[in-house]
Image (tube, rainbow, N blue to C red):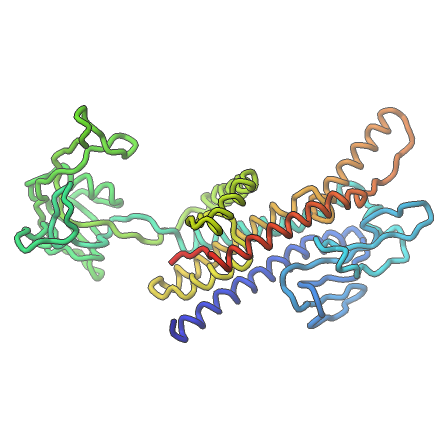
Length: 437
C-alpha cells in the first residue's frame, strides 16, 4: 500500500468522523432550538465527550466541543420532576450516557423546567433531534440520487468481445480459429452510445438488445455517438444460440432436464453503466427503503448476532449486509476513498450515501422508548398525558408528572446489552472486517 493510498484511506475515516460530528451537532440543535423557543433553561450545548477543547458562553448557554466526537448533548433544567414536594429540580442532559455527564447547571426558576412544559412541547423538543437526523438522511440521499446519480445500464457500449464464444462452452477466451465478433467487424468501440437502429431512436439498452436479438444474419444500420459526433455503422448479428429464459429471467429447463436454447442474433457487445440522475420524487422512497432495511435488521438482530459469531469463530464468510460498528464504518469509508479505480465523484457519492444511512440508524436508535434516549422521554410524556386524561375522565385530581427515571434499572440492563453488542461488533470489525474491495 503506497503513501497516496494510505492518505486517501485516512481521509475517508476523517470525512466520516466529521460527518458524524456534524450529524450529532445538528441532532442536538434539533433539541436546542425548540427548548429555547419554549423558554427551557439550557445551560450547555456540547458536541462530544471528555475534556473540553473549546467553549464559549452566549447568554445563559455555554457552547463547546469536547475531545471525543462520538456523542453530544444539551443540558436542560428539570428534565425529571422532583421526587418529593419541596425537593430541588433534577437537572439532566439529552445524552445516552447522562449519568456520566451530569453537567446540567441548575435554574432557579422552576417555571423554566422541562417537566413543567405542556406534553406537546416536550414531545416537540425530544423529537427535534431524531427529526434532524431524518432530515439529514433525506438531504444525503437527495445529493446522491439527484446530484451524483446512481449507476444504471444505458445504451452505451461498455465492452466489445474479440469473438463470440458459443453458449455452453467451457472456454472463456477466444481461440485462434474463432471468427471475429460482428461488432469488431462493424467497427463498434467501447464508449459508443447507440442512439438509433435502422433509423429508430434508442434510449435504453433493452432497445438495443432486442433489435440485435431479432435480426440474426440480417444487417442493421447503427447510429452511434462518438467523441461528440454521430457515426453511421452497419453490423450483421451472428446467428447464435442462447439459453431460453422465462418471464422472471430464469433459465427454462426442458423435459429432458437440459436447459432449452433459442436462436438469437449477437454482436459481441456488453452494456456499460452511467450515473443517471434521479427525479426528486425518488428520494423519499429511497429513504423509506433504508428505514425499512434498518427496522428489518433490528427485528432479526438475534439471528444477525449469531451469524456474526459463526463468521468470527467458525470460519464462515461475514455478511456484507450484516452488523457493522463504528470501526467497520471507518474502514469502509477508508476503502471507498482509497479505491483509486473509481472516479472522485463515485467515491464522494459513496461517502455521502454512507452518512445518509448512518443518520437513518441514528434516527431510529434515538426513537427507542427507553430513557435517557429521546424516545424514552416521548413515551413518558405520552404516558403522563394519557394518565391525566383518564383522571379528568373520572373527575379525579391531576396525578401530576410521572418520574420516568424509575425505569432506570431496565435502562441500565438494556444499556449493558447494547454496550456488550457494540464491543462484540467492534471486535468483529477488527478481527474479520467487511471489505468492499
